[in-house]
Amino acid sequence: MRVGLHWSVLVIVVLVTVALARGRLPAAHPGHPPAVYWALALLTAVVFLGSLLAHELAHAAVARRNGVQVEGITLWMLGGAARLQGEAPTPAAELRIAGVGPLTSLVAGGVLAGVAAGLDALHVSGLVVEAVAWLAAINVLLAVFNAIPAAPLDGGRLLRAYLWHRTGDRLRATRGASAAGRALGWFMVVTGFAAVLFRGDLSGLWAALIGWFLIAAATAEARQAEVRGVLGGVPVARVMTRDPVTVPATATLADFLAEGPFGHYRHSTFPVLAADGSVAGLLTVRRIEATAPGARAGTTVREVMRPLDDVVTATPDEPVLDLLPRLESSPTRRALIMDGGRLVGILTLADVTRALAWPAGAGR
Image 1 (spheres, rainbow, N blue to C red):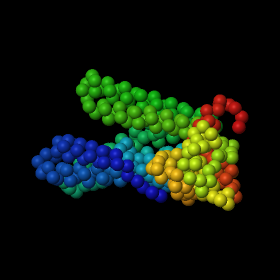
Image 2 (image 1 turned 90 degrees about the vertical axis):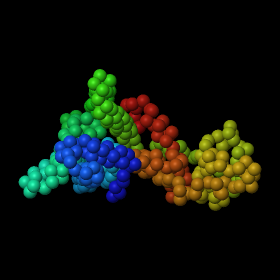
Image 3 (image 1 turned 135 degrees about the horizontal axis):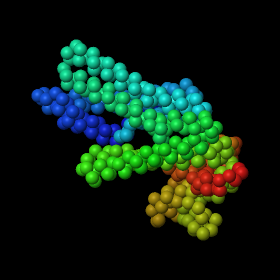
Image 4 (image 1 turned 135 degrees about the vertical axis):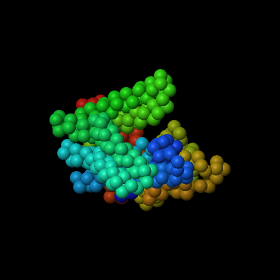
């Protein structure tokens, strides 16, 4: 399992370090050299990131125990995210996966509070005790905030598990949790800007930023649920474009361009076939544009095509939902559909969009 750090993690490290080094630490325990405040503040910020990682690792561990594969974990400015492949199979599994995150933060906060009390009893420097106490408080706050019943927070997952258990409809449950997430997001945006405008409290901008993130994430989660609802169990063969227009690998770019854009070659991407009829790669108009006009008459399609090894491929029986992540991460946003080494179709994001745009309630 891969653990990644988004560049925006630097923002939270800087914010925590500055807030502690220039605010809480010198205010609570004045008289120390500035270097001491800054060093302890930076160390505290790093430990805080470690607590965020522990929160996400707990999600990942319980997800694996419940049969959900984990791609990895990414820490970023507003916390972290465990990237799961698929969804919990039951409401109970959803409850366990979601609930362990806030529980981990709460336990971490309790342990750190105990450590702070122990250090204070041992008459350790009050500055160190203050830093540990801050870590304890922020972890408890993180647990409470994440437990709010609004997607994409862990509490939103708990709400979805409850609604899913009550209604038996995962999609309906996701819509309810996402609606709660958007409502919370808008509340934070409005109150955050109100604090800035009417009280001059710039910290309201932070609340507004988090609220905006909640709105965007909750909306995206609802959209993903709609996609899963429409495409769940649907094979690639039902969505792909069959018998795509191909181009021979031996054709020159000049000959190819002479046939378009209104004739046979009116698309922007084409599977490339070798002389024996096997698939050799994928040709895109962008690759042709990157070739100097004067060189196109002597350049073959094979020389500029994207080799088959660099192209996303799938079988007709593969579920669309399994292929979709690879399709979205592909530079060409296309997948060649192969059956026994023979090209039978091509799948693009436009094909998926058409399937999603079909009126709701229509049979598959």
